[in-house]
Length: 131
Image (cartoon, rainbow, N blue to C red):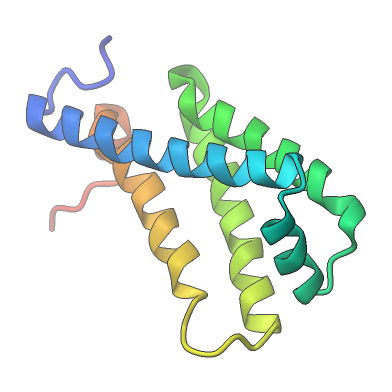
């Protein structure tokens, strides 16, 4: 695996752990939508979404997650997951939910990209955080 030739092993493993946690959460979210879990269906209804969209949304999220999990397509997957999370932010803001729950998908998106950033030296070279 030559994704991280120049990076440290600690960065590589930290990136793998972060990405794995993200993938597991996204799989859980996608599956609960695809199987139309009652709690998910209630949340979708509260958001004004018809029940018919649950399964297609779940399948879409699972495809995006699969692309993120495969090293060769992980950047494309991260872009698609970021778009998905943007939709989640929009839904929460539109619903005028109390507090700031829209921040969860924002922070989650940061984790998606941080995991990728720590695993891929080419991405680190492209997006340098140094002055």
